[in-house]
Length: 256
Image (cartoon, rainbow, N blue to C red; front, side, top):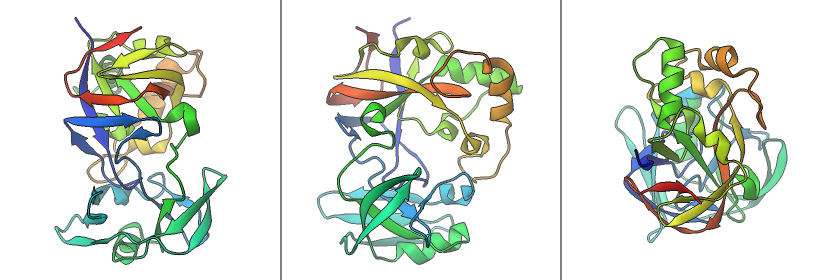
């Protein structure tokens, strides 16, 4: 079976719900429109879903032309305004200083109420992937999803809980691990996986509610504890972008 892109996911605001899309432009910095903004607490530290899973009940959409950010909450209410970055803030992003600018608007109060703590929306001073140049995008095989579902004793598992960019059908379980350091064509783009994605508590949460409902970490510890990897509890890979290009759902994925 030819390996193909089975799903594509992204979100304009890190930690909010992922959106499934049919096609996307892959840039050197990652997927166009993905994780353009993130949230910080009162100490200017990155806030994610590990402790505030309810943020996944909010959805974001960003129109680049009009610079309009829209956030839709679980109750159906929508908050929309023009993005106008203001004062500069040096934030702590995974314990690394990241220069940003604050983006004031109606989103702060609403998302603070969802999370239960005071939050502020910020935009990086320049586009930069979560993992630096080695982690501009992420990839996970559907075979790997089927394997962990079996380990958990469930029929299927929602790929969104792993918060990856690309899913690939037609691979053996964890075949993507063998692609580290090699060039892989995904649609019109070429990526180079640089390492495994080590997993955290976010994967235990239902991606629609943010409530913990599956012991994904226990399952990974049971059957992947001794796997040689770049990070503990590996599941999927992160990759640099060697050649930018358009990727569509159904495109061929091949090792070069």
